[in-house]
Image 1: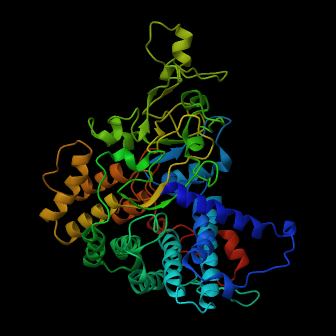
Image 2: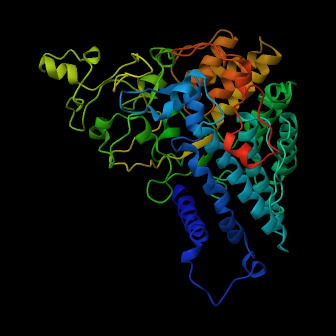
Length: 523
């Protein structure tokens, strides 16, 4: 299943390359016209590719994942002397001192509108084809476009709505209020999702189907109060039930099966980005988080960058016997900590000219100098900047690291997972009725899989904490913190932040290009 779809994506990526490098294109004497080309489903699926390949940037450094992880209480990028100062961007993201000039905002804006533009182009193409297959594929594109708008709605709030590819030269779309963007996404999903396939098989793997559309609706409605001021809890439950009652997905017995290198068989991953280290790259987490010398642990082709690490309080939020932190039968859990060994089991030493004795190991077989130089991922981080220890902080290891991996991992990244649907339903039910027995049962299903004791009741604290443990590093944390009114709280090396920062600023360079854009309040 994974091979089939990744091969398709590779072919589509080649098609995208050929259109991107127009100066190098040869002339063809025979041309297949649209009327001749779109004669079967395979032709439509092939054309869909560029709208999906746009998703591959999600797990690049400086993109959507980075925005979510570094601005939330999950992770940070510490400034380690000469390394990772990066103009202060990641320090400002952590401290919520960000401005409209941060590069990550421009990257996420470009990611979303790049996807929208491609969807609009393909929708226009499919609408021009007189073929009975067209409506179903147009519906798929509109649901995919709705996902890109869902990202914009959540991150920036007030953004332009562009539905047409045929726009006049110099077109400068105006900002639409967040409530209007919400209404647009809701309309697109409620109208188009029923037209999508309910199949859960090779034909829908890595594509939006009926169930994925319902998962999007559940997320949209769960956050409706933040987006519009009006809660939509019952609608969130109804959308989640469409997925649950459909029976196409189930919780994996092994939590880490969802994040393995070869995770295409997961019964839980609903919609994935099918990364491949050779043919469909972009999943750069191995580079983004591991210490330079962890190259010896996983025999990575390229030396990692030693950037992202988890906050101590986030690590400590896991219960001691939680499979998600212990790893269960896996060598490591969602966070990598402690002394680091090479493939032969030998202690790794930091090769820097200076080292940090606060992180030393107690090993009588090593000299005192070696104990000081030992590479040890510590739970506590000494400081955010400027002299953060090179091995300070546990490292993000939820997604299995393949020994010998290139700088782009081959794990499929789940944009929506069945466990999230269960937790979304549970939260919506709890908000309508804090004593809901069904909500408690759903949350305890997740906890049972993780080997921890069942909750006896639900409250805001334990529900948010459980979402954090289960959904960590899946680019969901920022929305959760905002919805639970914890986004403005102080945490390690961060003071309280103003309420207006629940919305990120519209990128300054976009406003410079388009005088009709309106900056979000406070920036």
